[in-house]
Length: 123
Image 1: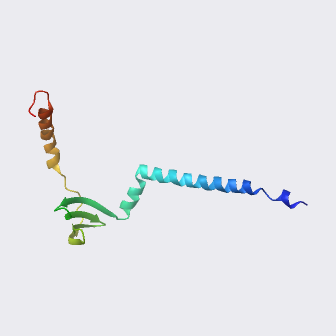
Image 2: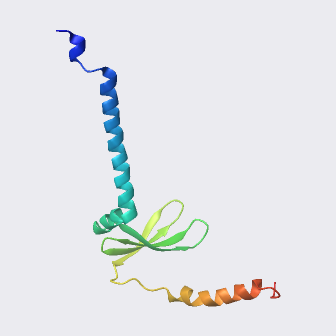
């Protein structure tokens, strides 16, 4: 019996393993893209009670207030260049407040821009 005829070629095994690994990596990339596209990862993170940024307000070049929901708590954080301080913690409200002021002001801003850039308008 000849030993060279009973063993598969090394190049053939290497190509088979490389092809299988490439197929697995490609499958993982496609599944990750599909999960991100469908919002599945976001829903899973929300179900675990992760942190959600609600609002920020700049107070200076390096200071701001941040409103964050963490689990069932709503935190008001003071953020500076060197530290983060929890200013208050409250129970998370059931419904988020609606910001009606910017929506109501948009038609007025649009009219001002139309008048400003209309031919023959004020410049």
